[in-house]
Amino acid sequence: MDAPEIDEQTDPNHPQQAGEQLTADFFGGMNSIMRMLLLGTHSKESPFSKLRGMKEVLKLIWGMVCDLWRHNIARDGIFASIVAHVAFPSPKNININMMPFIMGRAVSIPPEYRHYQAMIDQCPVELGEVGYLTIHESYVKPGESQRRSGLHTESPGC
Image (cartoon, rainbow, N blue to C red):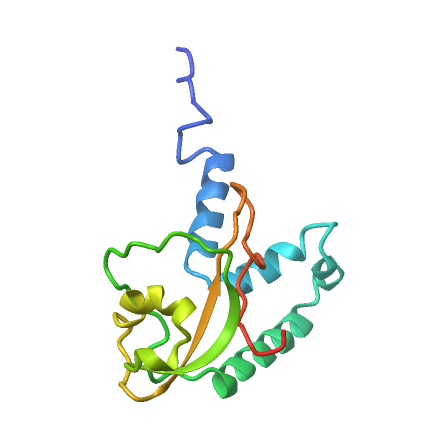
């Protein structure tokens, strides 16, 4: 009697497929930053490769990252919202960064930027509060970032 054929590409019990599924299950439920840190330990091109096998050092670094988040990231308030369908105005090569204005008071925005007022009015904030307006109109090639790639925050002067 011949042994049954095993398709290693689709058989979930094949060692290669089982290993890939285990990896997907393990990393799928993990914080994405922790995942990148651990994956970096296995890449010769990554500076994190120097930490491969240093479990206690990795735990210490991860604890420090979590402490920084706990103490420095505000968790109350509105930080992003979906404002339904919006129509962007025609670009005019505007580039302003964090210009303060009073929410709900169009006169606090210079006239040359007021064509964004309809979008600003959709933001779920307290009227009368200070808002910070950034407009960066520029052509962005497909696959590239407009300003900086990756996760980042904005701050004045940076």
